[in-house]
Length: 151
Length: 485
Image (cartoon, rainbow over all chains, first blue to last red; front, side):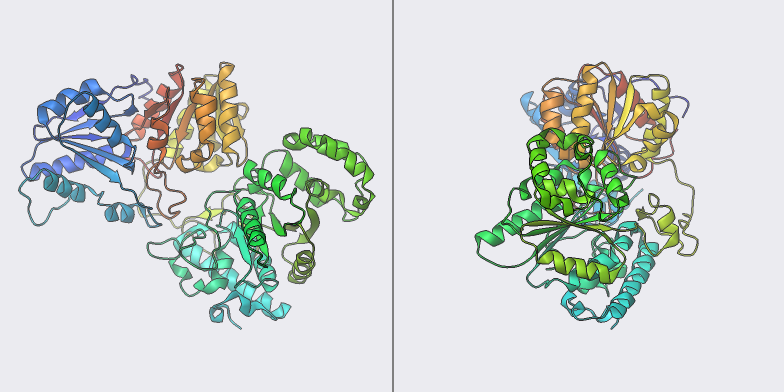
């Protein structure tokens, strides 16, 4: 890693993938899985935009708000507790700006996560990309196939 | 009797030293075999095999209460409390947990995954016992590493003021936390270990106290009492500090000599009030390779028992986030003398060992003392330094008021780097890095960021170092990146 020593602008995320049907806003370790989710959704005819938020605070509202308004369906993805977490930050910001679009928050619910491999825990919590893709399709009432496969 | 026939620890009662030694050997075999196959904590458990057996021979675990600090030294306890036959499932989904867990066994009287909590919990049990008019023994077993955590000292300070509350604290002294211990208390313990048993405290006692900076000020009135208290002349120099804190000190005892341990525990149970039994153990005892490399064998991935080498994984992996963090911070520190990396006894885990090797002057290990680490970082920030507190997400929880009161309220530029953020795996609920976004997001002045991969991690470290408007926190997961360079 000899390159990549430029600092990032505080509070600036990046749009990794454009899309029209659903906006995925992912934080940290959930960004790559969000890209996989977008691929799976594409196979099912859903076009997903993906934002790498980079900052949970301050949020890049200049990037998120217009896309949320335009697309009208938002999904947040984080590897952490949902209560008070990244998805909450996005919800609060949207609510304060009166952008009242449906939001699905994916992350760890209000339960203890017991010892297991991280992969096993994620599968239990419905946080693998195929599981998340399925949840998204269910939430937004999109015609869903019986089996959702990974990419 | 074979270990596999033990379903209740009270079955140890009445066993001869020879029988206990056999069981000790069986515990070690199972311990090594299991950790070699599944990974897990190795050194801590191997060091307390005799301690556990001897202690349990003197306790009635249907009534008496035992609190193991951290819990990863409690594998022998698990094998003696009905979990031998399932022990091969250690740290696997649905299997035996790597730490103590009240939901797993009625003999796990108090759960723990973080250090330094045992004496407080045990004291609470002892006070409850007395309030309810019940009678049973309460024992806390704490390592010398965990004794560098302030909470343990707070509990000792409190227990010492309760001369009528019976409480036994067993100090499992192996001179290590995960890395060699730092600071004055371990140095003092070291001195204690080397002292002849019958050396009297008369000489330069005041000097001894001055070497303990945390305690020094509070002890001045106590010093008078020592000079008056001739009875303490019979106490080896060793226990002077604990005695002055109100404990009866017993030891040091050879932690691998069953007979000596049993006799000592039996005696110590008869002493009223708070008692400290100082047991000297060797981490990794009985597995020569682990005895030699006590840092490396604190906890292990699966390995080959004969060579001690980790089993090679099938394909080369991209660098871990910790390694990228260590390398990046070290490179930046080499060019910026204001950068100081701070760890709370996790040099290898955080990757800060790289900084320690290459820029030792800009590296600080404070011991298991996250609260102190954070406020010390805040102090450094007031002087224009760039303190980087490299603390796992789960352990940073321990320094919450320091983050609020010392860092955020004063808007000081401390850079928090939280490794193991998110789901951590085999360590379970005590170690999940689940809450940091929520607990930091609500604090004024705090900036929060998280990278999508290891290349972005590097840029975020640069970002955090450059950002001097206030506190900033970076979270990244356990394990390897994506191979993007």
